[in-house]
View 1 (tube, rainbow, N blue to C red):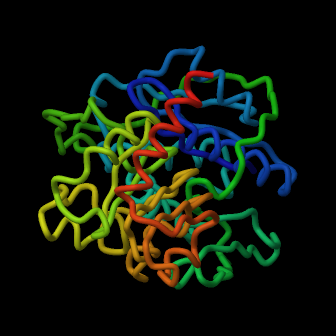
View 2 (cartoon, rainbow, N blue to C red; view 1 turned 180 degrees about the vertical axis):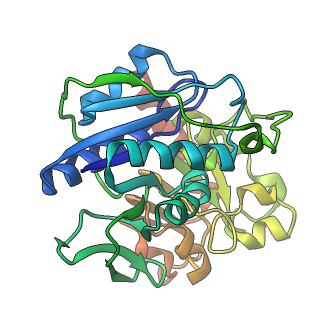
Length: 323
């Protein structure tokens, strides 16, 4: 019996989302009186793998195959399922990101496991196995009971703290049984954005709405994002108007984000937008309308014109960075 966590890597490096996942697996394993095992697919340096032990992994299963050049769902599913069977994993956990959402259902089918997606806490009980998740755009909590012997979970980003545990992790190499059929899909080219922070990875997001008053008014917001090392986002009306690219649209019909800090400038707070940002740890809003719904979701708010507030905020950030 064990808890297995799949840790995605980015060019051989792990990010905070990976450490959160391992920490969650470790805490869940302690609750179940077992160990947390991690599976890592691809070429990751040993020193990087050892970092996973700092968050509670007792064993790290490394899988390398020269045919792996990117995410290939069929191959990754087979690898994770084989490791789960080898380790006797009763629970397999993934991050609730694009990769996790692609792989978790496939692995659940392979293992004949029940699945809960987007969980945000450790189980309320183990028998029956009950986990929680946000529902109705974060306005309520759903309790999901999984009755199968094996379970698959996806963990919502930023829902648990990455707590260091300093396990003396053993690194083990595993060679899965794979055929060419598992690699029928070929990754021919991967194009990556290198000049800005990706929305789905960002710790800080700076976002603008119609209150920015035009496509030519975004320079201060871009400057603030650069100072904070933040990603830029926008509301759907902004992208529909062509002020910003559709890839920056955040909301129920756009990207779902869960940064540590979400700064909303000139955003009224329509329910569709709030549904995409409800998992943010801290929301800071600037709007001229003191009754705007965004202020109900925000931890801090400024009632004012974004074009007047932004320059002062930029100046304050510059001063703070000098200290």
